[in-house]
Length: 402
Image (cartoon, rainbow, N blue to C red; front, side, top):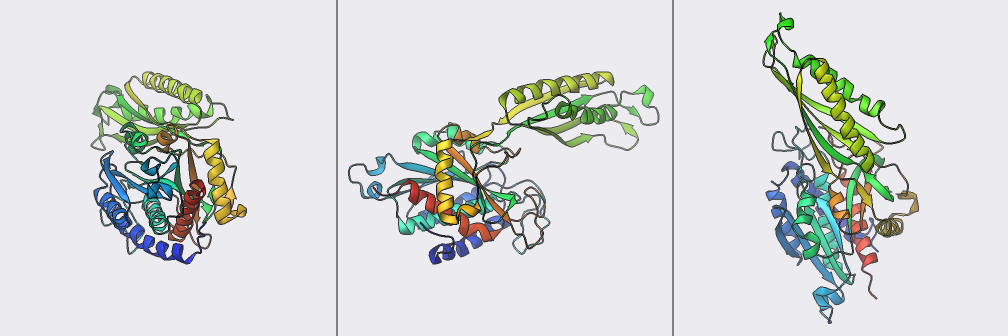
């Protein structure tokens, strides 16, 4: 199995750093990853990897066969042993303030979650495996659009991803901006929360700011709704359970001396358990409606179920842990950690075939670090060889020759 210090891995990681920084400088939002998809497809094809494009729009799959699957000895392309490796490609709609030489060249768009690194890491593994082919079976490199918004993973599954590219198991990696660089976090059970969205439109009656008694102020009502919503977690949810309600945008009004007709609030709701998900939605609706009524306003609530929780399959976890321990050592493997409340549409893939979602630490302890979704976040290129070596080791382990 390759190590992150192997000369071949190190050479590919140096190339992957250039790919990553190029992708970083040209971020693309959900289902708009045309340039990134073109870049990925061109690289894969140049290494002799079969490419299928147009899955979920900008998504693509690279297929590489090794051993008997490549030789066509009767099992051929229908070899029953196959695994999928997934990376996401989209950026976020936010302004970058890193000041890096390769910072985003597109105002209002930024790779602030490390998808540029995930894509480059998987590309690096594809190149290594295409050169070595030290495995017997089929590996599908899945490059997914729209993880941040739009559920590209769900769209790929609905468009027949695993019917067209059967996999015994599927694996995904996300950088972890809370964990030291090079440390793997691979845990059983639920790893990521369900991610739902809520839009609240508070409707009052506009008027002059100097005569609030002649109006019905939706701004005041909205402020109370924002505060009251937090009691759903603090007073209506078991303290030993997990739930997050974050109301993140408030829009209303056009002038400092005009009470507006309405105010719109939007946010996200995160839960781990199905029963908690149901209870939080019901109680949140009740609290919002009652608070709006108490202030004489009307309210419209639009609540949408988003990504389900990511639940790792025990068998896939065991295999990923085995590969990580063999490649990086047991000291750099975390087997138990509470789930994160972040959402992930890898859930749709893991709900379809056995799956394992892996976190790879990226924190450089020698300098200031910024979490994902921060305008100064930057993927740590130092973990590219670790990721490339892990992906390659996992494939060689799971598709070992008989």
